Image (cartoon, rainbow, N blue to C red; front, side, top):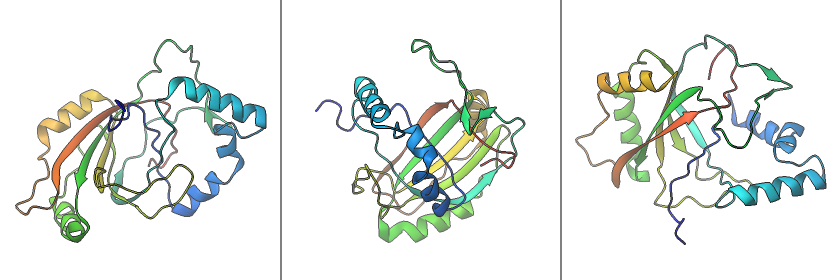
Length: 207
């Protein structure tokens, strides 16, 4: 399969106060509406449309957020009944609303505690233009539809930062000292992946 191991080019990324809040949403009407579950016809329509544009089915991954930092947003995107109302024509990409960097770390379980201690002491300050910064630890025990067992090829930690735009990321990258360790804490070298963020939904408190 030529797509095996290919990097995903779209990610739906959500941050919740508690796991129970996410579980309540996932079992509620809003989740059903978002996934075409309001009727058999709507569900089948969603499945057909997804099959036409996706290489494969979406695959959830769950993380515990550590060392969370965020700032209050300057403005709140308008929503209707909890959803963004955006005109999409299927031709033009949606407008970019933020910029996201994810640093992936492949840390064996027996090195996890040392890795977390060293990264916490690294004390990376929130650079100007940074909206959210957090270290995410993979929850490999989470269950749910579409969830598969975590493999050795997946990162056990992801340092995620959300910036107001790419210029803020570029500026921060020049000033921020990358995390490194004298100890061999990872099984393979860390990787960074970058995303343009769109369809942002937040509240007055930020993430």
